[in-house]
Each structure stands twice: as structure tokens, then as C-alpha cells.
Length: 151
Image 1: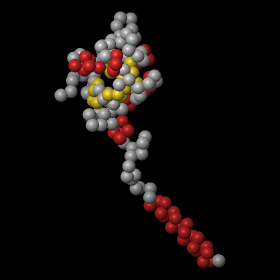
Image 2 (image 1 turned 180 degrees about the vertical axis):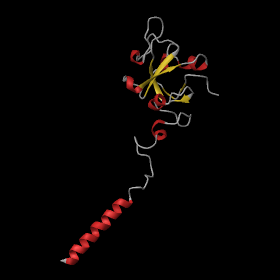
Image 3 (image 1 turned 120 degrees about the vertical axis):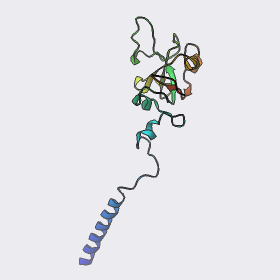
Image 4 (image 1 turned 90 degrees about the horizontal axis):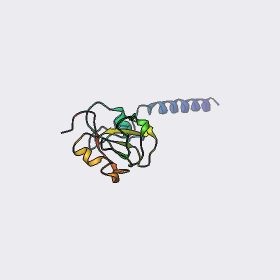
């Protein structure tokens, strides 16, 4: 009987040791939704563009690449409030100065959207929904900014 108790206690102790020994072993792969922010949201480079959430968390006044879908625009002009809650999910009446990007082509949830001011020049000419309504729902990695153009 003492031998049985001793073996049971030995197995329990060994089991506890083995379970504790595995706590600090890192995963050899990224777990979706876990890990560092770069693996979840991107780094803003052409090779690792931000997600919409990553771009909204990293608005530092510089330029970055963002992987998203163009879903609409925010109306601008006189007597227009021009906030994210004013999104028009479509192209009818779009102006050339901004687009709204989202995590999916059919997203209509403003929590998954981000407004992008299009600077005048090539970017505005290429991406605005007024001149290019066919760009709606396109998957792209446009850059966005609140200051000067990238080199």
C-alpha cells in the first residue's frame, strides 16, 4: 500500500513539474488575433501594409500603406458636417477630395471604416470616386497621410 501511495505521489509531482516546464515556451507560429501589434495590424510599409484598424491607431502625420477596400466617401462642402458618421456607402454624389476605406468590400459598419483625405495630384486623380466610380469595392493598398507626400 505504501508503494502505491509513493508511486502516486511521484507521478503527481512529475506531472506538476512537466506542466510548469512548458509555460515559457514561445509558439513557433503567430496565433491569429494574438501577438505583437505588427503581426496583427501591419507596419505601414508596402510589404506589410496597415489594416484599417492599424492605420487608425497609427495616425502620426506621415505616409503609410493601408490594405483596404474603398467603400464610399464623406460629403464635403457648404453646410456639411463631414464626420465619419456622415459616410455615403456608394459613389453617387462623390467629391474628389476623400474616400472611405473599410476592412471588407461590403462593410457598412463605421467602426470598421476610416476616412482618407486625398491630397491633390496623382493620388487624388487616381483614387477619387467622382472620376472613378469603378474603384468602389476595389481591394487596394493606398497610402494615406495628413502631411507631405512619400518619396
